[in-house]
Length: 111
Length: 117
Image (cartoon, rainbow over all chains, first blue to last red; front, side, top):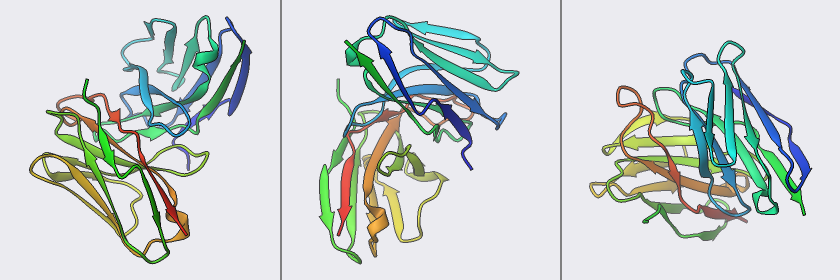
């Protein structure tokens, strides 16, 4: 059973567009929600993370929106660039620190 | 800045052989996590160590074992390898353990690609 559900599975946008990736979770013990970017053959790299006491966090072109009551969170990439083409994973963690990942979203940004 | 080091980067083994994967965390990081990522899949948590003690265990087969040494590096030992063990194995490190200390950012290494023939 996937504890963190991510959608869409793939996404294609034009350069400058704003791709949005959504995640939902069930376990209310989760209290840390990071997003990772992964290029083929590379390790995941942390993009941005949020805790449930905050509804939105922005770092550069990346924004997380968090809805605690709905148990949902999303990643927005502003002014997307071809270099943003990668696989994006949402994740959740509780007090043990282990990350539970979503299924991933493959993003393609067309020039 | 120093990153997580994993060795080897690539490994080819035959079925029923053994493999040892090594992870060297970022300096002064005392927590290590191991993840397995199959083709086109999300990383799955295997096991973690904090201050050389196992801190959590996930979907790690009994054929696998791991430990963290006094210098904080960690090794994942895999025996009786099966075709299904072919995957990318990532190690991540953090400074401090979650829980009372709070969640600390996990930094991932480049991974070891294991191919079992």
